[in-house]
Figure 1 (cartoon, rainbow, N blue to C red):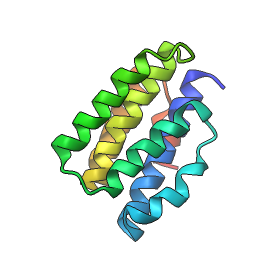
Figure 2 (cartoon, rainbow, N blue to C red; figure 1 turned 90 degrees about the horizontal axis):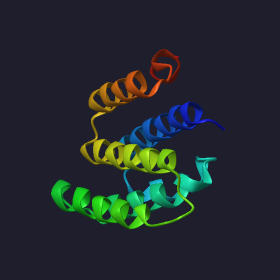
Figure 3 (cartoon, rainbow, N blue to C red; figure 1 turned 180 degrees about the horizontal axis):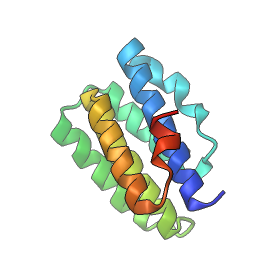
Figure 4 (cartoon, rainbow, N blue to C red; figure 1 turned 90 degrees about the vertical axis):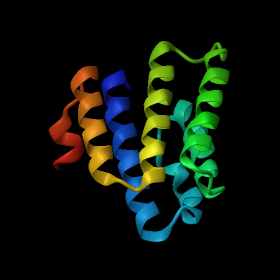
Length: 125
């Protein structure tokens, strides 16, 4: 799967997690982490969802995600595209923490515009 397809799938997954978190709360999200087919992102998504469940404040949440991202930079199996997607994933998780779908949609559209995705297919279908 190419980078653009992976990006679009990631943003769809993140939108789904935001929807689920607003409907049933963070606790039930751990049951949903298997929906991604991108194995290189699944551990990062699960890590972020576990942090959501701990009830951390925004600053501490984002700090721990940044520490994890720095740790993942050293993993030789990750490409630059993988690391970009992980960074986008972590930023999306911060929008999930805030529960703000409009901000998430704006962020997703911005990323897709700059990274070559198809905004209308992700957020308006």
